Image 1 (tube, protein in one colour):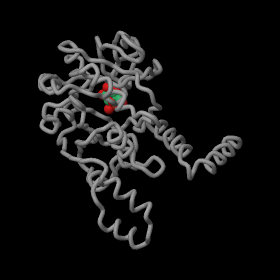
Image 2 (cartoon, helix red, strand yellow):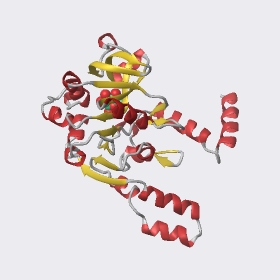
Image 3 (tube, helix red, strand yellow):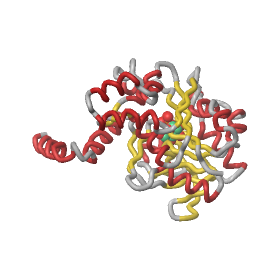
Length: 290
Ligand code: G1P
């Protein structure tokens, strides 16, 4: 079966970016001129996804507005003859079918994904986490995972190797490498201590999952942090059917972290045709002075 649907959980409070996120969802913070969530939505669209369910928390109406038609803005841009900006504003609204629901209580990522059951309606589906932005100018990260899903007809997690000091931040895979970049998953552990971690292979916010996960999620007890963890449900699933991990190609930014957010800002500015020349000169100059 083809993967046409994606779920993006966006119910987090964004406390790491306070005070900026007091009234603005963290997913709307821009890298250069684009909200981080739009990078994630574009990755899904460029990977062949046709319908996206965004799971919202409180205070998230700017997200709904961003992907909606803005009649006043379009009229104003049309009047002023700002055709490029007009096309841009229309593209955002026309990109894909966006659906939203609310996760009323923050009970964890597994709990959020469980809310997508009727949207997913028995099809394999992607999950993309908004804190992870992945740049690949040729083949989007999610497309790489969908290709694996379509070949193996089994769930696949997007992974990369991280530093030992970082394993505590991620779901960590105990796997056996079977092909270049591809592992079978034997074990999974959410945010282990370094001495508990079976490897440095971390799940980095991209999943393509069989709909069988919903039955498992119903029986998954709260885990790390007292929350229902998707990692725990995927571990149970891996005991029932094959689950793969794919070491995707691409530069991944943790935009939920200040350092990662700044790295994304600098690197996307350096990729921007209109900005790169002056910005590179500025960076060289400022680095010499520091
Ligand atoms: C979540 C997942 C974790 C995964 C990480 C990737 O954690 O629970 O397994 O490795 O995203 O960014 P969070 O960062 O939301 O705490």
